[in-house]
Image 1 (cartoon, helix red, strand yellow):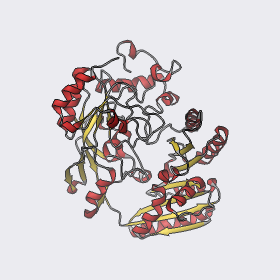
Image 2: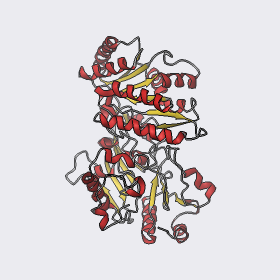
Image 3: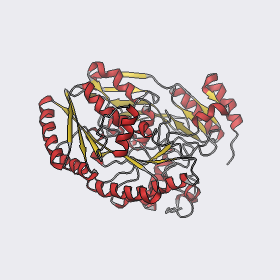
Image 4: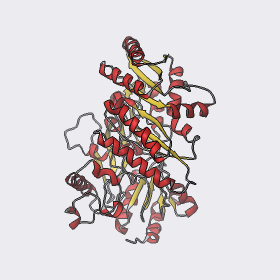
Length: 483
């Protein structure tokens, strides 16, 4: 389908400041992909609104012209969700960076979608509060993007993902109308449309104001670092800790490839170079509780085969232990010219067998894999290392990524824990869901966006995007071309 983008640009320039419309190709190239660099597509036109009213005006303009749109935050997503892979307007929310309201009495803050994740905690830390969801990219990823992908992070084991911390949303729907989802309270009597919107990856509209739940900063935090001679031993330690009834704020594992990448990145050995795996465990709460839990956790790690243990109690020392994990993705980027990260989830009990399977798949495809993952909830982040210059490498990378996700699904897991489906994994969604399930999801999408203008072609598999083999009924498409 062809759209009159020239007429759209003309009208948009009447609605936004001069610098709010980007049409020069050399400037648009900065938006040709998100954090998933394997696929690139330069958008034909982009806008940078700064207020809810401007977003509403832009989407009304798109609606009048019949032009689809794709929302984009900081561009750190890892599933191609912000990729404009057909003629559409790119709506960039990175200039919407205001804290709109701070309500410490009720432990909440309302922000625009372009506010950076770590800025929320920075804004309230002096009053003894913090915002719990903390993706590894928290110093650059935006709250709007976190909402779109339902992002997690290190602390999701104890505190949950983004959906557990969003109390309300102001949303601009695809026709340009503005509505509120959720009333800013923890409990609310209406249908949970807030929950439906979170994780919808921009397919239902654009959030322009987000009310977040704040938590009181814990009295005490301890971080334990345990290293193991086998990955299986590290997995045993994770199972032992959770089986004992302990609930750490986070448990993270890095394998030997990631360990040495981080050490080389820092220029000194933060973690033992010869360890097959290191396990980071954070415990927080009241001081007496944390001290007791830390001692029990150390005993369980030693019993599981830990070779060495370090325990940090000072905030600066705790941050030092976490620094390597938070820098792991950047560090691995220095090992190989390019990497492709996947995001499967498996039951904790199946971690050792799936990691063994990934190791074998790495050999079969001739591509090294570094493993960095949220061990506490089984959310794997295998990084497949490759060079774009090698002929056929990209297809092998995609095939290996798909094979890893098949292993996750085969043991009762999922194809995504927090990175979303986007364009990257839309052709795998029917591995987990029946045609009737996908049609139900389509009905929800139609309720918000009957003309399929919001991030078209993302998440749900279709014959157009995935070939005729896609397992999907066509009952809904007989009346409306959803995709």
